[in-house]
Image (cartoon, rainbow, N blue to C red):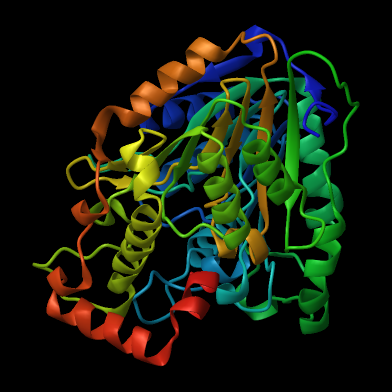
Length: 437
């Protein structure tokens, strides 16, 4: 299946591994400053904080130097128009965009993409920073913690691909399926004359998005990279590639996910490979490395129960597969580094195929959000050493689980968490929550 999957021919020197958020930020700002004809940035959000404002000012400076430069920033519409969770009042990021554009001589396009009519039903999780003929791909959004602006960081993956055809394919998809759609609107409009998309256009947008795919001149031999996009369960090329990667593994799988809550088809596929004797390494964030984790010394809110919900999902999975852990087939690595958080995603299969993606590999990503990814076919092993070096870097701050009992139980949780978790269990709401969170 994957042998027949076409892609864009890629030379060994066209791939770079940036590895750290600092390198990612520096490369992004450097490429923006050097841009000649176009900058397309897609992320869940561009935050109104020091790092977000630095990126926005870099975009404005590039536009001022070259007014012909095409600059388009895509963020989730709903996320941009609300404040941070727990904040009240009108404090969305769009207010910063509006303010900056009102003072600018040369404006740029900052577009809100409403994948669904409500944020909890699905968001823009499309990733990629396409600048001229290069693509910087990461699951990161643009704010202080993702760019390690003030010490703390949210660990992600960061790759730089120098390939004009890949860059053009990703730009063309954005222009054809997002920018041109009536459901998409500018987030820089002044309040007095703002025109928002029609609700009927937003409701039907998901059907139009689900039909869109990346277009490119395809090759089926040699080293290549395949851009994939998916929305919804049906005909989702990205989900299919994930399952194909697992199904075709002959020796080993290396999987990263920040929140352990895999969809059932993926759980079944992983269990099947374990029974076949395939080694599987899973790197997942410790509950304290979850971006929703609330330390005990801070005031607790309901959203803080999420990391514990994911931890119980992990405990249940490891308990069922304890035989594979004992046999050395299943190796679960918990990532924790001081007060930093973990946001890595992706799959490597037999050291020959590698999916880098923004998808969390959970039911929400599987069915609700607009997701994309890049699948590298390394048939000759020309990037094997670099991917192995990246994996060692990822494992640097991990602890391996040898028994499911190493994962905390509900009884050991703080009292507010225990109360919420018991309520969820009593109402049998965990099934629904795992599908939308």
